[in-house]
Image (tube, rainbow, N blue to C red; front, side, top):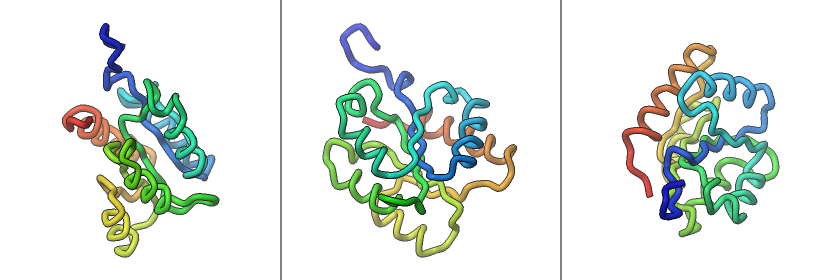
Length: 147
């Protein structure tokens, strides 16, 4: 925290939303290889993320600097989660990167229509996943200024 009670962006976590425990484990390991690895909160589906974001913790120091969102999940899928985040004026400024196995044009187009900041197809190798997160870290938590 900065002295005046404002949360420093670098202290805010990155949120990862994915229903596949193996993917969460690989993502966590890849993120641990980057600067942002120690500031990650994980959610198994969109409803868990939305509950968190609407809680006091998700609106305070625990508010994510960036959300990495899978599309195909049970309960509340990534599309509906993205739609609800972007419809909420108190959450809509959080950048959301769709991070999914899909590369279908329909999913890409729909994600951007719903307000995604980026769409990334999950890499199939661990080294490429690390490379992807290094770019994400450099761009989204370094270069880009967000509210």
